[in-house]
Each structure stands twice: as structure tokens, then as C-alpha cells.
Length: 200
Image (tube, rainbow, N blue to C red; front, side, top):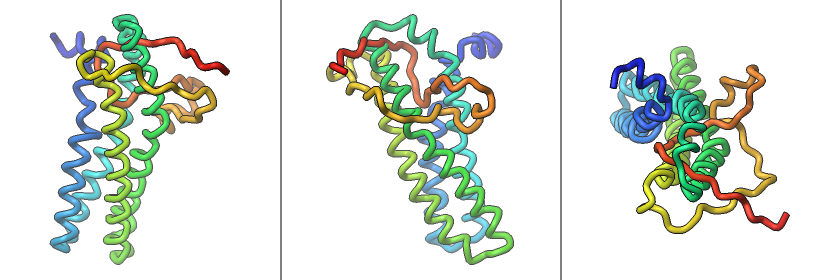
């Protein structure tokens, strides 16, 4: 499959790059933690830069997941569609943690040049936020993996409450576009949607 053909199938790009905000972020966390333990300023700055970049990688993952949503939906059985919808809901609800992590890491990187003493506390804060982001990403990825892989399913996904509030996973990058269709974070390539049977 050529690169141009791959770009015409955003769901495959999504699946290909979705490891960056998971495994990539975890590796960046390890690098930053080791740098802090060694009290190596240069290594800490490199760790913060990696943390910011890999946390921000959730944006292209979300963009390609959103672009491939309809294609994946059309390929899926009812249960897969239900997991796709749940996957989307989780991404819209928790992707903001990645953006906050990226912002704090970038802020610490910049401020530390003028105020070196802020480097350690901001780095620790970024690490904690990255840990929260990673936990959220794992939960989102788990739901995404069940879209295609029936063997991973243990019944239908939890019901999505109609009054749940969530930002699109591509927020804030699409905030001015007028298109607030929810994005996706970690998706596989075969989804399903089960109609809600809530009594509301």
C-alpha cells in the first residue's frame, strides 16, 4: 500500500500512530523521571520536550480517528459500533489531559531558562499529569481494541449518559472551525453501534 493510498484511509493512519500517546508518552515519562533522579538539567529539558511532543501527538491521532469514523462505522457489526461510540465518548471526555500535559511540559521548558528553580516542580507536575493521561489513554485504547476484535469483548460497553459533557478530542485545534463533531483517540478498524435503550 503506497503512502498516498494510506492517507486516503485515515483509519489505518490512526491505528498506525496511536502508539505515540501511549508507548511514546510512557518512554518520555521514563526519560524525564531518570533525568530528575540524576539531577541532570539538560536531560530534564530533553525529557520535558519529549513529554510535550508525545502528549501533543494525541491531536493527529484524534484527527485521523475522526476522519475515519464513518468508514469504520460502515464496516462494523452492532456491538462493534457500540464500542466505537463508547471509544469516541471516552476520547472526547479525557483527551484534554494530554493537552494540559503538553502545555505544562512546554511551559516548564520555557520558564526554566529564566527561572531555573521552577524546572523540578514543573517537571514533577508534568509527570503526574502524564501518568493521568496515560491511564486515560489505556482505557480509551481498550475500548478501541474491542471495536474490531470480538474476542476481547465481555458484553456490550457501558451505556453513555445523554447528559455527559465532553469536548471533541481535537479541541482546542478545531475550536474556531465551527465543526464540533467528536474526534477519536485510539481506534481499531472495525466498529458497531447499538441503539441506546435507556428509559429517558
